[in-house]
Picture 1 (cartoon, one colour):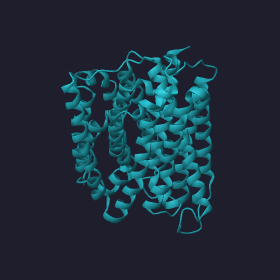
Picture 2 (cartoon, rainbow, N blue to C red):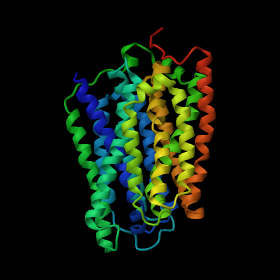
Picture 3 (cartoon, one colour):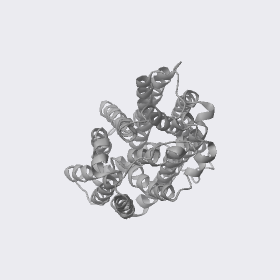
Picture 4 (cartoon, rainbow, N blue to C red):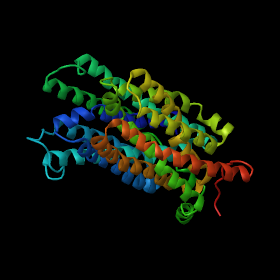
Length: 418
């Protein structure tokens, strides 16, 4: 088994996932124009990508031991290719769309987004337990390094989108045909990266998951998910994802409108750059502050950052607010997964899948809600409303921190079969 190759392939697979996220956000306004959609309708078409993500991460995480990691990753790559080609090839509607399910064009878009969501979920459903199995002695740190490539993919996708826009003059006055070609070229970059990880995993031997190797039964795996502390952590995951991924999806469009034309994708790239660098230091920081101390600090900064983003009107103000937001949201996703793996090791791939699936489902729920707020109250109010979510997290993570402090400090649990 080539541990390093499997880890690198996992990182590239995650890059594919986040590239789609950032490029989709950058192309949001162009898609709305070409397909004659309101922001709320566009949010509803984006929604199955999140819900498909949720379904497939749960299915993939539950069945990864049965079907095998390589097979599931291969299916994800094929879904990426199919989904992007379907979006690029679908014709435009003749007029404004009254209902997205009453028009074959928007139904095709919806199905394509679902396929792409399934691809994303299969990636997460495999790479999280794979990472825990490859590096059982250093789970939280390795999970942070792996998930540094989520913002890494946001940067790659965002810069590609920006460079294509710059080269084609999409920020200025261009023909409708040029604008359409622009977002199609941006999307076509995604299957290219998917092919890269498909090549890397071909013929590779994948390990049995940590739970299976330890001989933990399926019954014990399911029982782990009923522990009160797991349920409490599961509730926190709803809010962490809604605070991070929901706003991220709308940042390019919202910032462009708040600042009077600044390329909002640059803010997404900037915050992703902050996350990319900081996640390589997530392990040491989690040990210093404890995972829940680190996430409490992050929730405070996220609330301040989101509220500040709702008050910006200049490029300087946007970058200042984005800096606070970027620092705040950095450790939510990888530390939540790291804690899940460390505190509930018998839950195996299923526990990680439930946690990850919950996060994506939460994001998919908040995206159309933000679109509705955007349509009715404008971009500034949208950020300020969402800023209330991390305020609740300050309380919940603070309670976790105090609980473990009373017990003598946070410690990982060692997996063992009874």
